[in-house]
Length: 454
Image (cartoon, rainbow, N blue to C red; front, side, top):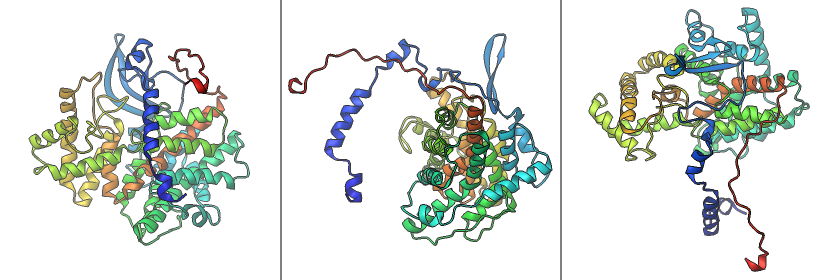
């Protein structure tokens, strides 16, 4: 079977797919009748309580006189406000991703000696098996780096003599190795794709043990390995803000679900990668960047509030961009008044835009940030407030860093692997039951009909 026939969608497949679609449609009124929390959330965005976690906390409201009141969002890692963790990096030059990873995994902020020892441990694991790049990454490169990353993770199973050992020491070893290797797997996968599909020069830089994760990403990715201190610092902040977000986000919940079956670490992380790949989860910042690319073409005066508001209204009316009726980067399942990650990010984004000479672009983002919630509230019936989320600015940052769009979601994964690892360890430590939620069957009994009578 050649590639064209393998990928072909025939008329017969289309006919069967339509049958499958009809078979799968459930009357929407039944979800209300049986009080089904679609997406495991109610209309107010409150999630169904499925477990307990000591790793992070997402706060978006408070209780006043027995009434739930929306508040500005807060994000805590092991009880520490993320805003404070980021501020703690400001007075000195050290990078924070490794420190925050230590906190998530071990429930304490490291001393200087503990942090240096941990960094050395990660640096020691930052090496792929012999010929892995040549035999695995360079062969059949995918045009989607998340698929490349998942394939590489699953293949590492074959190189691990203790791959199925789910004891905590062994799982920690595997997680630390994956945290160290994610930048290499992601960027080498992109370099292979860029070379074979786009005809660009192939660069395979070796990581440097003296560099942080953020610095190594830029060192490995760029042909000349150069970057400014501000570029590395902002990428480090991006990793910190993306590394964890409670147990209920889709990929972390996937981590808990698959871990509960007691399967191996590589299968668990590959499943989480598959979840994060989805445009409703990790791919949203790509949509934001593409939306703004069209907006900058369609709006002649970026400072004109009326023109910008008209374009945003067209987005909601499915008359612009991808005709999905969405303003990407605005709104969140939990946050209503503000996303703390976006708040923290914004000041750093402004500094980088000044360094890059992109003040006008930043001003346009700021204008949309102010106008979009107002327009959405006018156009839509909202059960809770709406504000920008972290994806709104992260895509802009990656664009300013000249990161290829193919790596936007893998960068998210490079950060989130720390959170996934902490949640996998937590699920195993508590020795919980296999996660198996209930689905109510609504099909009626039918009598079997022999094939000759159908």
